[in-house]
Length: 463
Picture (tube, rainbow, N blue to C red):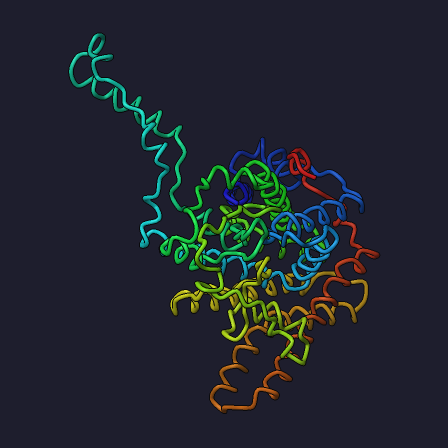
C-alpha cells in the first residue's frame, strides 16, 4: 500500500509541475507536449478481464484463511465448504473482513488470557537444562574487560534465539480458534479444544501442556510472508494502475471499479490475518491422560446443533448468528470449529469497535461502487440499475442497524424482526448480484479511452 501512496504522490507532483507556468519559451513546446502526452500503450479486452479476474480471485480465495476441517470430513466436503465461503466472499466481502477482525480481537483476548494464567512461562525441562552458557574466560584471553563481557552476552543471545520458544503467541491464539488442538481419548479424536478447555484441563492434570512452538505452527501453514506478499503486490499494482488512469483522465471499466472495492477490503483482511496459519488440514493432537475421569466430567462435550430451531432462512442466518456469538448457539462442534466462530466473548469496547468497523467497511465497499456513478454505460437502464444497487449495498447495513435499535425500543416480536431482517438480507444479495452481472455485461460496449494505458504500468511485474 505504501508503494501505491508513493506513486500517487509522484504523479500528483507531475500534475503540479504541468500546471506551473513555463518562462522558457524555447523549451515550452517540448515540455508541454511531454507532460500533456505521456507515453501511452494499448491494452486489449483480454488484458482488462484477465487482470481484474486474477485480482478478484486473489481477493476471494487467497485472502481466506479457513478453519481446520474435521478428521472425519471427506475432501469433497472440505472443497464444498471452501466454495461456499468463496461465494459468500463474492457476495458479502464485508462479512469476511468482519469475521477476520472478530477473530483478531478474539485472538488478542485469548493471548492475554494465557499470559495471565502463566502459560507463557512454560518451557520444556530439557530446554532449560540445555540452555547455552559461554564461559567468560574463553574471551578474556583475547578481549579485555568490558569488551569480553559484551561479546559473551552477544554469543549467548545468539544461541538462545536458536532454541525453541514455547511461549503462547498471537499465532497460537489463531491456531486454537481455528480448531488447532484436538483432544484424543483412547486413541480416537474426541473434541476440538477451546482456549478455556485447555487451561482448565491443564490445571486439573487431565492433559499435558501442548508443547507446540510458533515455528511449528507456521510450518503447518500453506502460506508465508513471501506468498502473501506476492498476492499483496498484485493487488497493489492493480490499485496503482487505476489511480494512474484517474490522474490522466482515462476511462475505467465497471469491472475494474468492482475489483477495486474487493482489493481495498483484501488489504484489511490480510492485515488482521497476517499471523493466522493458512489452509492447515490437521490439528495438533492432545492426549487424555487421566484414568479416573472422562472429558465430560470436566468440560461440556455436547454437540447439539441448535440451528435447527431457526425456521426462516436457516442457511442465510447461520453465518451472521455464529459471527455475533448468539448465546443459545453452541459455536464449537466436537470435531470442527464452525467457519464464523463467535464463541469467544468480547468486551463491550471490542464489540463496539467491531460493529462500527463493520459499518464503515460496508460504507467504503458500497462507496467505491458509487465511483462509477457517471461512467459511460451501454444503456441508461444499466446505469440506473448500477446506481440503485450501489446505494442499496451502501445503505442496507445502516438500515439494518437502525431497525435493530427500533425493534429494541418497541419490544417487537421475534417473528416480525426475522421477517424484516430477511427482507434486508434479500435486498442486499439482490443488489450484489446485479452489480456482479453488470460488471461483465457492460464490457460489450466500451469507450475508446478504455483501451489506452500508461506505458510504465505495464513494466511492473503482475498477472
